[in-house]
Image 1 (cartoon, rainbow, N blue to C red):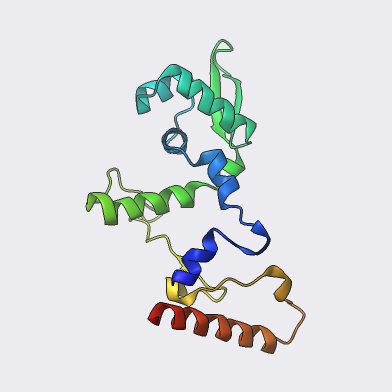
Image 2 (image 1 turned 45 degrees about the vertical axis):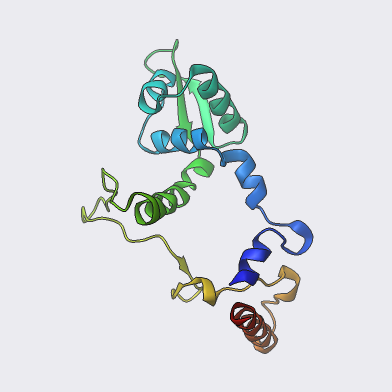
Length: 179
């Protein structure tokens, strides 16, 4: 497991997108704005009252999020003097990340479910836990994971070399966690 954690910051070729992603949204106020936007807030004044943020900080973060393509900014249809912010597809794709962080906080920080509870609109039942899944749908835990350089993966190969490589990586992880 230590090997996986160690590799989070030092992937081959420094091609990890995590630092770049954190530059865009890895700050408290960005997450609060995202949460409000995912809940339908779209006007500057509504963001102010919803999350209790200073005007200058809100203006700065909204500008950064628009520049990053996470939100759009346009005049309101019903009042051209007002501006409306909406999540783009790129912004909406952050929903699973937001829900995973919320669930983590419920489990490890607050110890209680958040309210309101996010539910499936069809069945009106709470959503399940966000988790990692394998290509075949299996739920994966930390010990089931390994890093493999993209150049080592060959979808046209028969798979035998890839399987050997995965087994080797898993053995290395197992040996380092025992040591």
